[in-house]
Length: 217
Image 1: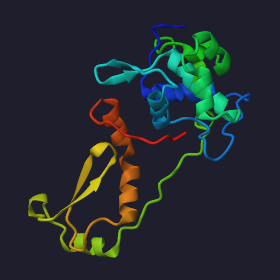
Image 2: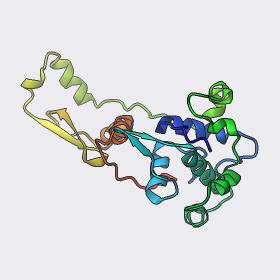
Image 3: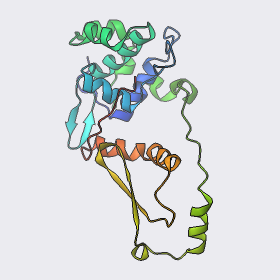
């Protein structure tokens, strides 16, 4: 196995997508399992021991060929209808040879970044990103908030006396200028959580936040 190969979490996720972009991979067996794993799924696999912990370079997590094979092997077994408990019993501590057999990926997918395989960069986006992207629907701001800011366009932060705090995963808090009619409602909070995910992932990658996540499958 190429010991020099290492990727960031985003690069690992892209390589996993390439490794699973073949006709032999049937995809998700049901609506509760993702066809392709995202960053949060890889982190969950690491937490549960399905994937080895990454090496750290400063605050950047780096993943190698073994972790790539582990993630792909997990998805192939899930596509067969296996539960995560069954997969863990089979693959926890598996040898590289076993992982290669289960993952069944071409060698070029395991190539280090300095020797990128053409297939990694030439795969069309529609193939690499086969999973259905979840598009957040923009919520219309309540009329009371629109009126408030329309009537106070020059309101500066130091003139706001009230603040609203929205709790985010990992213990983070988002402070918002006070609204005379009260705190953000449930739709606001849901939209804020969705929009904050990339920032929370970045903070977790850099060791600035510890996300306590539930399994995303």
